[in-house]
Amino acid sequence: MVTRGSISLKRRDAFLISTFAVVLAGAGISAGFGHAQNRAGATAHTQATSLGEGVSKGAASTANRGVVRIGYQLDGTDIILKAKKWLDEDLQKKGYRVQWIQFVGGPQLLQAMNAGAIDFGETGDAPPIFAQAAGTPLLYLAHEPADPKGEAILVPPNSPIHTVKDLKGKTIALNKGSNVEYMLVQQLKKAGLTIHDVTLDFLTPPNARAAFEGGKVDAWAIWDPYEASAENTMHARAIADGTGVTNNYQFYYVTRSFAQQHPDIVQDYLSGLEQADEWVNQHKLDTAKLLAPQMDIDVTSLYQSFAKHRFGIEPITKDIVAEQQSIANEFYQLGLIPNPIRVQDDVWQGTFHLHKLP
Image (tube, rainbow, N blue to C red; front, side, top):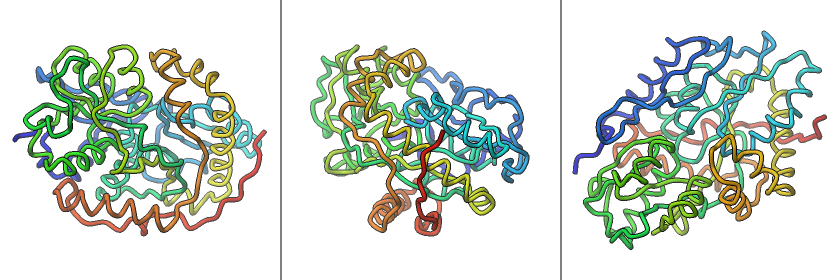
């Protein structure tokens, strides 16, 4: 079965083409990083909001010029760190300004990191595998607790699809290179299918929701809180989630050069994330109310997605590395990445020295 988005193309090539577009755009970029297309063949939806003023075109850190650039997604707890300004105030005392740069998904965020446009970022478990294969100079810093139920394969309420096996010959929307891609691969494998038995329609979450709601795709592989929103507002049914096939970790990263040059800021970043996670654990309804207007998702769905998860940064252990390595090995065997990688080679070797920010 031919898949949309050219699943057979070398991921490294696609990744670097997108990255080159980021570099060409320069300051104030508001261009598409990915290659998502709708079923009618329309060209890419914007993959990230404006990167703001002064985005670096090179790979070198801009911290020596007083700017620390942090990539974030609206569904991550780092948006709380941004809203509370704890890190901004802490680094301001040291002579730095924090530049927060928003992305629609993890693959797009790491493409920007590969282009030298950000210093820190957060994504799910699959994006760093593609990024490492493309030579992105990232280091794994920490991860959030496992959240296997935080992603799922959804179908419309009246769909005849009731099991993963029923997806054979069907079209599935998903964000290319995201955490749900690995979950989908594993669930298909468990059902005796492969990605070649389905059609993959690579769409960003907003475009995928529109396609799903409009009946242009048969299923949607997506993460929370988009999952919870679809279940509540469209009565979508989950036929499978990450349970039994993936832990669905969220990871935090820093560029290798930044970590070498500014280890103190790395500790400040980790401390801020831990502080933000603690706040979310204690204020999940407040977090939902804060994010609802920004994400255009109802408060109830956001609260439900937060309520079933515990937040808190944890170090990268040998078990975590082994799990990421298994994802990398599987992607290489499937031809989704062009070359084998060693996850351990890109793990930060520092230790946590967490402290309370202002």
